[in-house]
Length: 279
Length: 295
Figure 1 (spheres, each protein chain N blue to C red):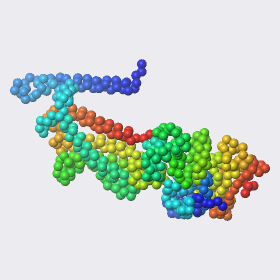
Figure 2: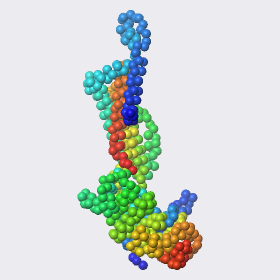
Figure 3: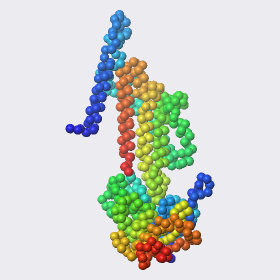
Figure 4: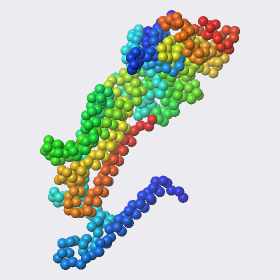
């Protein structure tokens, strides 16, 4: 009679989700009392005032709107009316580019710091000061120097995702087991071959963990960055819909941000599993 | 005197202290091994056994003195000196074949893949791991991992094999089988081998010469014991040999008492001419003071 843990967990998850939807639905039904007003005034006021409908959309409204978005994810009706798919693609593109540049900088630099105690000590003060700076604090400087809002957003993604990767690479490289390095030394393996055949595979799980932390941070930051720079992207979409007072679309955007963030994390988790070795 | 294949000449290891001065782990250490000989160092923890082995391997440098192998002073590591590490030190992301092939391709860089694999396979077969080529170290038992370590060391056909307590982490039964294996392989190939152990029985079974080190810091090589047991000894009937107890008691006496008192009781010990002892059966084999009668 006892089902697997997985099955029972799924039942609980679905139960919780339905309870959440139910509570949401009940909470956003008719709430305020309607007041009588002149028809002209009522036309200005909208359904919240005239029919007592809650300003907060219910799950059915969100569901219907979401279905609409999912049916036409890539429509483009000009700068302020693009499909959700296009907006997400812009955001993912920026994150991807900034993240890629960060990988290209952080991993070689992390190797250098991890392998050379001198560089470790010499670069440490810079890293300690630069690391805690909020990525958005760079935005004005980026806008002033780069003079392009889209590139500035990419720069912000680069600067926020570089630190976890850099530190994890340096740590992973520095803490490769001495005995593995000694094996390479006794086999007279040269520095480059040693770096690729012993140190890289040994440090790979730690490096990938850093990359996974970074992609999470990058996805958090892109929303805020796009709210600032505007134009395109899911962050801009959220801000635009807030200005349109479309809470339904804001909720849908929040949901999509969560789903895409989860997918990015899962992809990196898959890569991490691929390079992890059992001992 | 037989020819010296390995000659350790007056090496010392000192570590600077924060207060100035230096701690001497061991000093003025002289010892040598002839080609094909099996030498064991015995001593308590902290006497610098592992440091001596690391210096021989080239992983560590002596503070004083030199090591000469095959007529040349060594500097750094070399493919001529293979090391079998205490903790097997297999690369866990590679298979058994991968680990051995890595060593083979490091020695013969121009060999093609097929040749490397064929060469590695002969050594996998030699240590009895046929069929486990594609397993990863995590899928192997402790004994099998150490076999891979032995195969890896043998596969580069080194002039010397260096073993740092290779079997200390294994259970007694596995240790016994692996000792047989090592003895068979080293005799077959005429391998010069240098091993660290603190297992008296292991040393008696495997070694031709047993080097006794006093306790550190300031450890010295106290004595060289020549193994009086016949070369064709077998592990099962070793203890029936008339010299067995003489040798065993001598070694145990040293570890229990003389390793502590040696420096104080032997003021004119000459580290360049360490006494060579060959414990042998006399009238009373169980007497604990045998060593004094056998000088």
